[in-house]
Length: 156
Image (cartoon, rainbow, N blue to C red; front, side, top):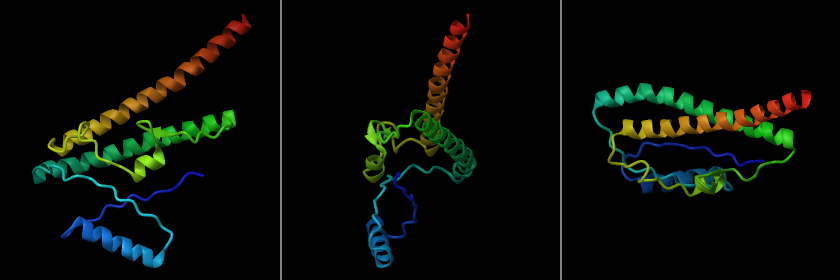
């Protein structure tokens, strides 16, 4: 069974490292076997209040879209595992196993420059997810298309 992760964002009042230490101490008091991993996100260019309000509306739509795509991918993988009878333990993100990617996450400054406006970063991520969705559609369509062509040839 795959590991489950919670991604939690906390407001930083004074120091991020102080907050991290407090979080680790409080969780270890109640659950000694819970592993915590720090997900370092750099300071991003926020922009004006108007741009933030506009972005907050876009984020809800982008989040729904990205969740939908991730669920499609999960369903497709589960379907392929069910059909083939083989469990795919080799899922990766940019060639790195999912667990390692999540536990050792590093912001990709080349893909998402922190000096870019937040809207550009969100749009870039949205575009990448849309491309992944298109790739998934193609990877599903062509095998089905080929299978139907084989059936048609067999029926002739």
